[in-house]
Image 1 (cartoon, rainbow, N blue to C red):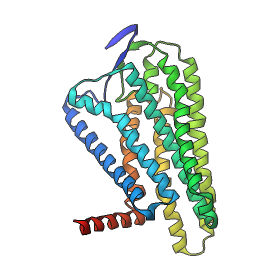
Image 2: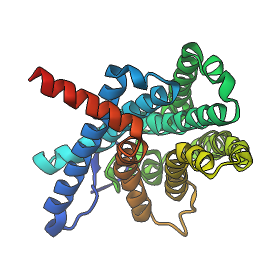
Image 3: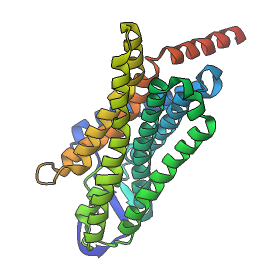
Image 4: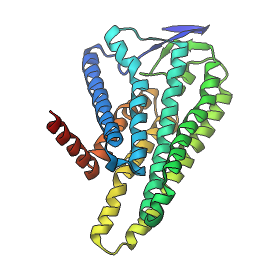
Length: 312
């Protein structure tokens, strides 16, 4: 539905696909993945909170990551899942801005939490004797709080400028959620300031800075691993970092494809698919890659199950 340069107070979310024959299949798949993501991350969060063996800096950051994944997935998918059930694809202007802010902030927060986890692995491997002194509870709480604050502060100016736009050439958003890029495509307001700010923050604060802060420690980690004499010790050290490194590479690849590719070479539809993969698949990888393959988490899960059997 199109309007010619009209002030609007609501939008219409186009959705994942407009092909009627596959709507039910899409809804079932997205709902199942969403529920599995919630159950998996909630299980990890409860295990970390309830099992004293997991009260370490690494699992503290992992608990934060689980909270981010559950919240980010819910913020991104709640409207499209409701629209499948009710058929109502309308979202208010304020609701659209709130979804844009929450989805963007939580994505940025995830980048910085992964950076904190990279630093944690660096200290554990390169400076193990001072690990508990450097990664104290106070320092871990400070790093986690800083990640949350940066996520909100960096996205707030972008959404603030976007929310000042009231003139749009279309009220239909070609996406499954409200996001900065598709909204910029349909506004008839002057976006030069937002374009510049989005480019600067996207290039430096959302890409280069967290990317460098995440991967530079791995240069020192790799050097430390190569200095280990025994193959068993080398494999054990690499194993502690492999899961984190895999998710980081995958996340940055998806975000670069979603936000940094030019419009001429990547259509909005393809970026929508990358956004869906980021909102659905990445949070699902957290419990699968980080935890359920981890012997400490599996041991904690067995302990809780055994206690439940004894209680029953």
